[in-house]
Length: 364
Image (cartoon, rainbow, N blue to C red):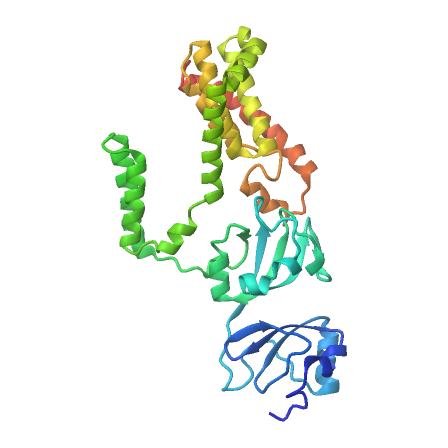
């Protein structure tokens, strides 16, 4: 109440020339971005970012109280629980190519960005002007409520703070029972799997194991749109004869080698396609092609379908091939060459093993 900064704008205080950045203002229970024309009031808590020596100099020269906690402002200031956590930019994130300044993290996600890590290098200055890339790791600070909301966003992969989530173990038996019932009824062919899946989701919502909001957020809309588009594309290719042309071209090239050789070539073609256009669209595109190839060869289509499943699930030679690749891409400081160097031999090894085992389990 006796501070000489009360009633002054931030630009008129020693903070404006101290070489530090006032990142946020906590006023009561509200957290907001601090602007130069903001007027300071009694009980305001400022979150300052900068060199430690410059921050401590504020305490020595200007008698500004420095604290590492956000609840030391007296009884009239309620405690605001903040936490630091890391967010990785997902491979299909809509934020790729945009800057933190354009995204406006405080308004959009209720967090502040303090640092950025890209391929093992740390950036703390001018990070608001850096265009975000796939695999970038952001060090952000926000409330526990903001953390809970970010956990279900498709734009990010949460790396830190996940341990704060409450695990409701007493609801596990009901959820497990619903899953087993769906699998059992589908296995006996009593109901279509689509009907059982919708009924199971409805039961989980009605029993409050899953909230409607969580159920809605769990839907992977990009994948559904992709599958719908690819099904439409597959139908169009079938009606126009494009799929037959592709199958005939492949048959003319390798068909005379026999079913086994065609199967091997088809497997590695799917694997390469998974590395180039991601595994999900590759699987949707190659499945009808594999079935058509099997029909023209006069063999069972199951080996070709399983080839698509294995080839599309083992894309290790690129960081975007699978989400787990991306999880280590940023923190480990890897580049594309590392994935090709180590992942390509694994792709070849798994491909050879799969091509030997699949026809043995699912014969032609």
